[in-house]
Structure formats: C-alpha cells, structure tokens
Length: 112
Length: 114
Image (tube, rainbow over all chains, first blue to last red; front, top):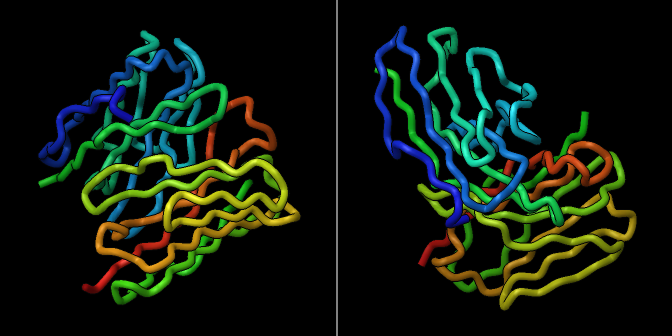
C-alpha cells in the first residue's frame, strides 16, 4: 500500500465549493478505485477506472466526478451537488494477477 | 448485484479472548479476500482464499473458505490490543476476477479491552 499517495490528508470545504482529491500510484496498476467511508460504515464505491481514459460509475457516483488522463493518477472531484460530502475518502488500485486492492492513506473531507 | 453480508457488526472482547467474524454470499465466489483497517487508518490486505474448504493461518489468525465457496470466516485466537480495528471481507463483484472490482462486507469492528 506504500505505492499509493493521497493528498491532502485533511480537507475543509465550505458548502457550495467543488474540491478535488488527489490520488497517485506508482504500482503500474491499470485499475483504480474511489471509495467513500462514513463513521462505522463499510466501503462504498464511487467510481472506478480499469484503464486510462476510461472510468465507470460505482454505487454512489452522484455528486462526484473523476478523470483518468494518466495511468498513475485518478483524481476525484467532490462537487457542490453532493449533498453530504463529509466523509473519509479512500483511493485504491488493484493487482491484475490477484485482484488484491492496495489503498492510499485516505483524505478526510469536512464541509463547514 | 453481488452482496456480501458480514457479521457481527461490532465485537467487544477482553484481551485474551477469541474473536470470529463471518462473511456470507448468496452466490458462489471465485475467491474471497480479507482486509484489516486500524482506527484512523486505511484497509490493508491480509489474505486471499481461493480453494473450496481452504484454511490458512497467519500466526493467531485463521482464515477459512467454505466448501461451497459461499462463506468465509476469520478467527483470532487470544486477542491482543494490537488486533483492534475493522475487519472486512471482500469478493469479486463480477463473477470472475478479470475486472478487479470488489464488493466489501460491512466490516466487523473489533474492540479489545486490556
């Protein structure tokens, strides 16, 4: 999991503002994922990308957008349309041989 | 779609007691994975089970895959305070493993009282 970085670690946003969370990996993985985790809850899939320039909606994509212009990078934008954006956001990539997922340290987003 | 049910949601134990979390699927799984998330941290891969009836051990942790490949369990013997965290099971979302997308169980939050 040391091959995935997320920034920033903590992020504060005012209501009505868009914010972009960074995710970078140097594991040479094709597939990358964004999850949302609320306190005491499991992981809910927001978006995933299996290859550069392609991505699909997960279970809770509304109010979020992504891009995948480079293999190493999969940024997530939390838009003002997301009604309850305060959460812990986790980025992951997967090993194509085992489908094991490697997670970044996460970004805690708080909307003020 | 694929659903993976995990129980219990919470487990509080005294240090030295055993702990078990269970994961169940309505469909046959090609494999199942287990992850641990320490408080304030991120999920970390523990193990993958592939074969029917497979049992794997990592020190005090024992992982089992059911004969029908629809359920799995994680058992911790003689818990320690370092075992505190949330344990997740996860299974491939799309029948096979070609896409890497996983469905995670809700997780079991383990608290260990010294």
